[in-house]
Length: 126
Ligand SMILES: [Zn+2]
Image 1 (cartoon, rainbow, N blue to C red):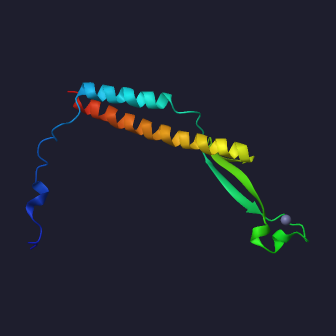
Image 2 (image 1 turned 90 degrees about the vertical axis):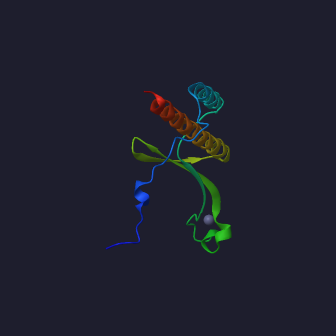
Image 3 (image 1 turned 30 degrees about the horizontal axis):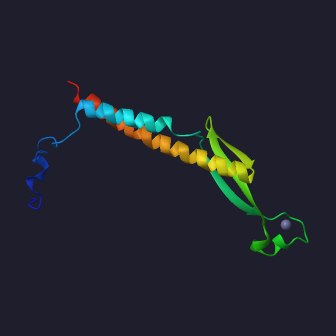
């Protein structure tokens, strides 16, 4: 017979935490999030990597030393309809692209908050 286990399982969670958001507050909060979304610039997905490469010429220094390798080359990979698409970007494109990817992450995190708020609103409906 097990005696170590207590009756914790049956413990009640108690009342809902006080100070929860009222519906009006939620709608205000939602409006704020929507404003945040409106201010996010262009978005795109994927990752940008900067890589160095060997050129393969027999008498080039890159063959011997990593410091002599060529680059950086900026490579953008993203998923499109389930396929990985790879592009090489100029320095300037890479900078823009990285910024737009950051924007997308911001957008996603705002949308995540919106979803959570909406769930709370639904759960409060009777
Ligand atoms: Zn080389």
